[in-house]
Image 1 (cartoon, rainbow, N blue to C red):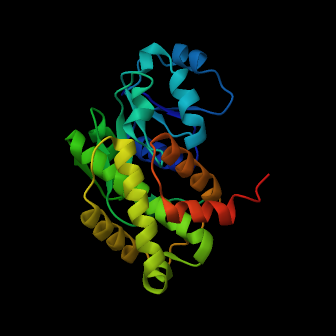
Image 2 (image 1 turned 180 degrees about the horizontal axis):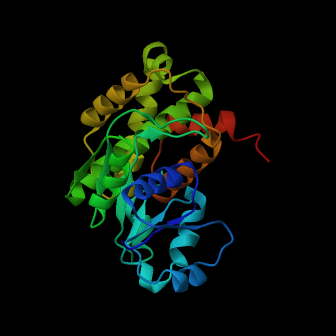
Image 3 (image 1 turned 180 degrees about the vertical axis):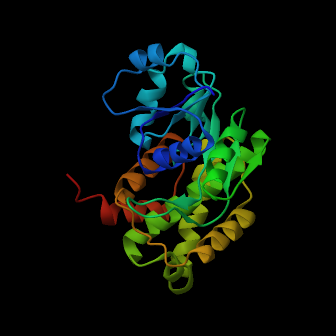
Length: 257
């Protein structure tokens, strides 16, 4: 079997790697600080290159991907939008993961993950080997919607959670007005980032279903303030006025150094 390369083997990357190892694929990890060019010389023709670095490291990683790897890339980050990879002339496969993986714990599945692109089968096989549900999608419009849905989940919980703390179920039931206003503004932002209108009612319905699948999921992630600052920068670039997110910015970012 051709080897699989995992660039940035954190919890999600190691989960996929574990699935491929169970299937008999050799897995070649590339850790932070390791030369991508040197790694590409060691593994010239991998079956897939899973880029599982954090969101903030993604642009630099894609910029430095060796040419022999660029047609076999898969991405698994949160807050993905097509312009991120289009800026580097890459057409990747994408896995939109709906499971949480913490150190020393088994994956906790909310919904079936979603796999897209030429390597979607290999992505699905890795998850299937670990009994993690996933499904393929095939159309670009489906990808845009599924990316927006995951981004909506992450951003609504994190940004509203700055004010409410608590868990997702409490946000939905006890702070429903804030939940809806934040969700609607995030959908406006996602529509601008995806360069297409997105169905608000359908997305909010799917968001509520995802929350009900794991109502105990905590709202406030450790990068919530970074996500809010990034959302406000993107809104400014696209000329959007998002009053609720802006008020959260005044409340939670103004005092930041």
